[in-house]
Length: 263
Image (cartoon, rainbow, N blue to C red; front, side, top):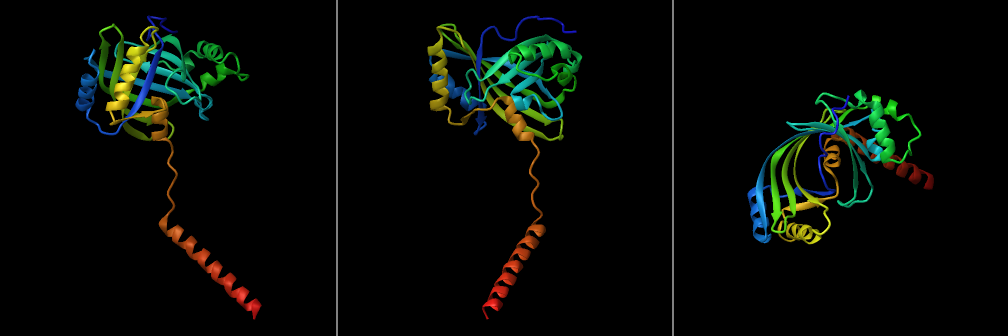
């Protein structure tokens, strides 16, 4: 059973943007933002300790449809949520999230197939014609992301508060066993009416002065999925050499045959 709703993870809708870290110098980036955001304070908010697991079927039925069954585990809580990803490549309004509820760290989607299937139908407006309960029962861990790093609060004098994170992510693809590490700078901006100016000031400062950060259109799952996907096997050099030799011999034979016919 779910443990119930012990408080939503966020009170407001949040725009989350991810950046590739081209030059990994956390102190330098913080100094730039502190200098250029004159009416803002940047305060250390603690270490990041989080595990995010995405579940799917063997054929990746859900993630290929833009739906993530996600379990997030923190030291103090664990909860399931659904994320619907649109095809629009913008950070704002690209994801629609639905909070399912608290659970135990070892719980799996197959422990709550009816509740999760009902919520999937709500998110997709009952567009699925397949048996979603059966689909959820067959979901297994797909991408597991162990996230560490540092979190900071960006607070303006008007009361607006955003969050930045320097994340170190260890991603593991449960289907092929591949592991990869990646550094991500993430920016979380609450979409609160009346604070559009403050939100834009933070975005402008990063865009103009933090050239070591490169904006990504992918979310964390998509980044880790791309990093850990099956690699295309490289051709054996000897095989390529033999193939080129055969191709050259074939051309030579064709040329000789043509010359013989002309004679």
